[in-house]
Length: 603
Image (cartoon, rainbow, N blue to C red):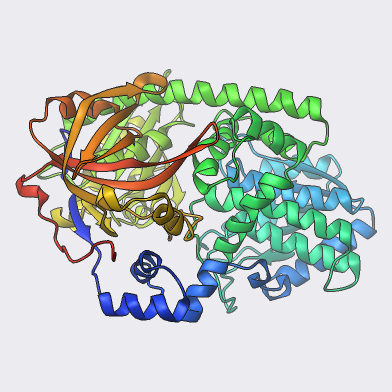
């Protein structure tokens, strides 16, 4: 929740601890600039060797796929199926992680001459994961081996059905297990019970890449794969990077390596489909791609296809070698994303109005909202935005306009409340539920919503105090504008790619003045542009998603404090330091005192 937006919780700013001695030690031992040493320490990287490993993120740091639990046995089965000309179906998921993972395996099998196809369930009609009807249909159409991607680890009944109907099933997934492990022919998972893989944070596409790598080793009959397969795997790292960044898994260890090298691969080794998609995203002229380009441009377009029940088109886009078809698909998916944005804005307006009427920031630890006509493929996005706005977990429920089908809901949590546990605790009011700690889904009868709302709010209140409800903003250091040179920002960029587990550094500045009124910019005027001055140094600032703050900022008398992310804006060959607004508040307000104020840029 931004500290100035009405109707929600005010954020407290916490500056990371500052230890000049430790910064100097790491700076010297790891041969890094002081600001990089400080930011590494803030991320828990204390050892010089670990610091160099973090910054270098060499592709050779990826572990052998044979070490991934279940990968060796699964690769043997798939390779045998290819050799036996058995019909293989890649069963993906409808989000960017599932799509990219499915595309990696599908492309791998095609290169190896497999008899293969793919299947992605319709989000609106079938829901998430493996389902029995789809497996029966695939078997009737001749499928002999099904390989799931990014789903299946909880599909106990579906695995039993597969055995009954003579369908060999290999599950590749990274999600949490249920009480029982599916009895499938193969199970590939970085956290498989009884195993000890060193890194359990791979996403679905990361797991798929490891399996594809192992299959390529078998096809090459060697650890070092043939040159054509090596080129394929280097290209597939780009797809894995999209899935990794889009699924918001921590960008550390192998995920950091995949993201770092995948962004380079996307720039220079992208498939014709990805080239077309980057063209409609206006990314082709960029000198290098960033994780934000994936998170805010590429992934939303892929996800839009899934949200509207057309994920199979996104997989086709990612795997086609026909440039004309690729351009058609990219433009169509781009238009789907425009429709998604329009729907999202209208739903957010209605949900925000409902929230302001129902939310009591002093007493309520969560929000449960419901509305007819809210698109079920979009409510999760709006729930995420409102969770950030109000600083509490938010459940958004799409009700059937005819009142016949059950409501479909999505939940998001910014506060540390485990949504999977919360929904389990309230399951007596639900038809079904599933998901993770920070994001989950549910089905509910309309007449049970009030009872569920009461139970969910009671659970949230019991699990969190008012001081723990997502109202804290971690700030890495104070950053006077005069010290934000292009060289300093480039040094900060050496920690990229940024994302979950390695967020883009946030700095703060106090006593900042607006040199001209803020301006609304962007589609739907959702963003603002600011001209600021701090200690006589001017700076342009962009506030993404701060459109509703425009009037309040303009009416603020006196200086403000801001939390921001420094960036280098590239425009027509010119590079200029700018800042992106994260939070703001009037200076000298009671809330302006951070909990800890010990950090500053060390120069």
